[in-house]
Length: 427
Image (cartoon, rainbow, N blue to C red):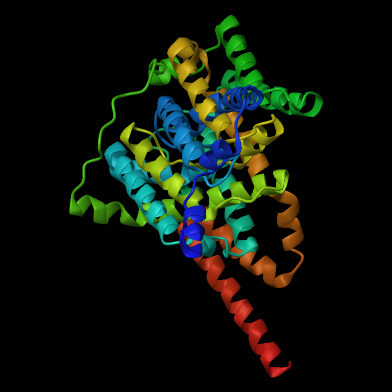
């Protein structure tokens, strides 16, 4: 084999094959099983909460974590990557469902997966990593604010006269108008989740804070017979297993209609997955393979769409949890998906008692943790960084994610060109 062939083989080789070639024993399996179970416990409430916030039923979040999560780990360019539904996609998925329905979402996710695979095959993964850090911080904070706004209705149990508007400003106006309909019991359960999760994270950081909070809120709602919406009353519960796979409906007209959304999914999926892999590298001293990572993400998204799942990406919080729990290889992520499937088969009826406001509380915590508040404040001290940050953040909140990223990148490029010109002229 030539040197070029060896280099290409390394680029397109999943980390799972590397781990198995190095030798994998029972001790490794035990540690991966413990880590996989730990991540699955975190992923159960999170996957359902993200799905509901995205405008789909909670079972679709679990399908995504099971099918997509298994393939992300099996084909990943990182030893520790955990894939599943991510909070960053909520706004995009919700907008796609509202505009094109579930069939359009399935097609969008499939096309996004295909494009991610092509990005990896043609070795373009490195280009995504050149998006300015300031832009990343700006759109992440913008997404956090947008998601938090989307949870106000469920957190407070509000009853709107009509459909909840998608754009931020009309949404806040409609929510303010519906304020008199607030359900204090629903808000109390959501606040209970937030309080318990915050306390557990402070005093017992290794415990599954969100799951404990959701379980406590569910028990409180059931014991006190509180008049709140639950997964059972609002969605009819979740099924005990995966649905049969089904290809999305392909027509040229529908492909052309969803293509802009698919491009947004692809861009965000590439950024999120590579950022997560970089975080894992920093925690472990390892180095991921970016192009193989994108190929794995692409295949996982295509498979997720076949089973009715939503967008899949590498998730920073769950990947970091995997590392802290002692995960040794991609097998921990594969086992996390197996444990989630076991939960659906065995304990699906219990999910019916989970209050919707409790899952809204989970997402409020996710938004708080997602926004890089200290870094945002630091970047605001420099006028140029502040301009890029404010443009990205503001446009992401008021308009959409893609426009925010484009605006931020263009402004950052202009500042970079100005600096180069000044250096060249000796100014």
